[in-house]
Length: 144
Image 1 (tube, helix red, strand yellow):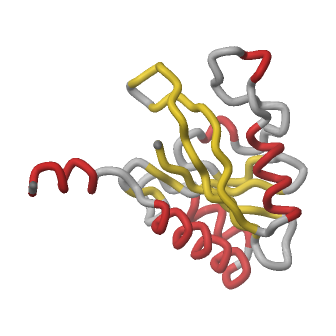
Image 2 (cartoon, one colour):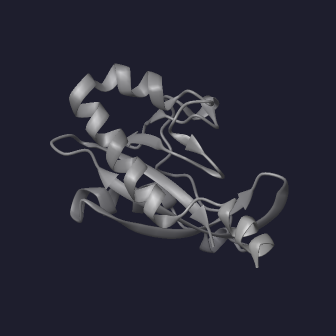
């Protein structure tokens, strides 16, 4: 039993995703956007844990912080589709993230994504949390 518990402990949890996105949002409002972006972009920082990380996006679809894909920073990703087997049916995941942040303030979005080291896309869910008072949201996801 101990062995299987350790296997499951390797992955991030939904609760951790919620807590870390809210912590990132609080940091934006407490320390300012520049300081928050600098912290969120640290690959070895506290917003990267287990198999997850926090990213930050504005409502126009521009990636502000992404510790695992620095090449995306500054890029508009509203037209980026998920990795569905049928590209024609691909979900515009960042568009859905943005709509969730705008209309609900927070929520889970599911999509298909490839896990590093395994090219076959699997279901992933990301928690999206609007930074209070700003047109920005933080997100973090887990594999299902």
